[in-house]
Length: 316
Image (cartoon, rainbow, N blue to C red; front, side, top):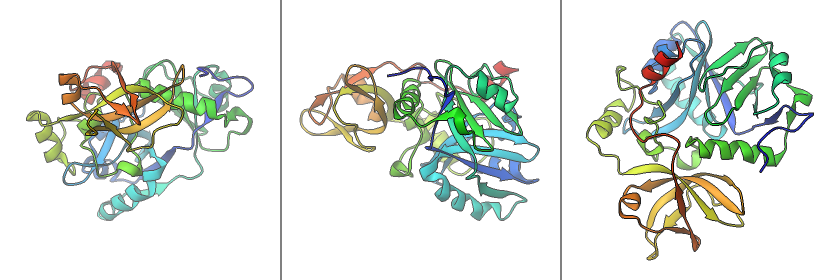
């Protein structure tokens, strides 16, 4: 697969993302009671990972939270969840001076190299540290984890700067998978605890903030060590992509995990992220997908708590 953008295009158009804007004098206060992030950490540079949960601690959506201006926040999430989450949050926003809107005019794109044309178009210098962003009136550049790559949000159509090449779109998805970063879709909404997507290992949960919806369950699972399923990186030889939610089974047909995201890798392999019972790793259980053997790979981060406050402190 290609790993860099090919001229004349500087970036590949990405349609899987949506922008949910939250504006108003009470925007921070409102978000603080709904999201796993410490909202005050989003000061205009650091874009913490975050999630929204049911009272039972199950994820309704995950994403990244950016502060684009005074009393103006933007949540980046999967487009399949945008309407549902917006309608859910509006029920609570009615009690605050806060308004939510889906910004359908925002164009998302991803790039590795070259990116000079986009930086010049936006009038910015590209951020160098993962999970940081730079914003101008024309758009935003957000540095993503893994090998150098940026997620761009154009407030206006970027035209000839963007490609719609499916190979490059797959390359972007593959980079997320190799970074151990899974984006929830509507297929598995209200299904996982945040820790099942390793969200606390990515700095997506603040255990130092006050209450938010689902906080009690999420905290109890962490402090009592009750998380028995975890996100893993795996590969499988295949001619077709697994479906989201497909089961990973042992020789007897017992399901031990399910696919969360997938993309074409190298050498006729599909790479995927799956939520899997931790006994698979502890007992070295062999699994397959449609009779093809599953190979597990090491994640690029330790599966242990990483406080977003610690990440923010390292950026200052």
